[in-house]
Length: 327
Ligand SMILES: Nc1ncnc2c1ncn2[C@@H]1O[C@H](COP(=O)(O)OP(=O)(O)O)[C@@H](O)[C@H]1O
Ligand SMILES: [Mg+2]
Image 1 (cartoon, rainbow, N blue to C red):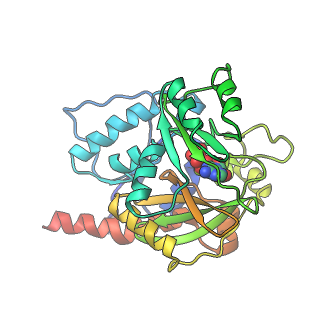
Image 2 (image 1 turned 180 degrees about the horizontal axis):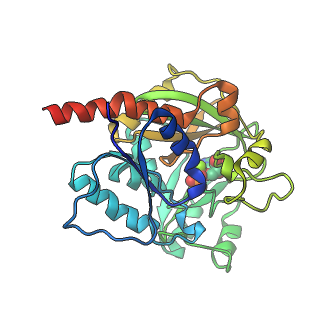
């Protein structure tokens, strides 16, 4: 059987090899589409095949300031033509806004930290004064932990928003969120592909808020201030002891809620993060469509995330496309 071409929308080349290796191993032809500058001509239909959206909300931090805006148009173009898209427009808009993530998590009854959004310094300060305990700031279009600061006190926050360090983030909106103090320094990320739970992973948080599990993003112990996105993946992976398997199974009630969410919201690939408080309450705060998998952990548990993504393409998406052609 001839497999369809897989078209990968990407911006950070460091994240491509795990996916392209898995596609090669399964015999899928693929094409990479780099999205920063580009052209869309509406008189031309997009290529046939399967499209995978791998565009991250932190693209602007790699000097790719047009990527997100371009991806929006590109995904709309694919949608209009009815192309098979993994994490299409709706999933992308969810990933680009922590407010929308909060709205959707609430819709599925998932417990979240108190989360509010504002533009305008007066509004932000007014909201900050409504938090009884510690709170954190986030860029609404987040990623890489950018814009995340912890405050115990609204007066300190008032000084911060008047300082040159304050940054409204790429979409000009700030989230204030209840800070959940974990009794031990880790968060958990639940990895879902299609309708399936793959595994959950613990990430140690003692190094700060930047927790991308991609081998290419691991910070070497020698220079913790740098995110070596262009570094050697194998070398970075050798430093990687930040990630371990979390003791969570597919029948966990939270996993079941998250599976309902990804099904209902048309997200085919997701890494969803939660933090647990001292009473064992789990608060979900981040939905990543552009999830990356730790190679080190994958080898330990013998589950390669991108191989599972490609298995989903082969076993679910390709048969669906064939049925559509036959109909
Ligand atoms: N409400 C919260 N309480 C405690 N820690 C949090 C909270 N929200 C985020 N964090 C910490 O900050 C990290 C980054 O936050 P996140 O919302 O995932 O931003 P990003 O989209 O940049 O990854 C998290 O992985 C976690 O360690
Ligand atoms: Mg996160």
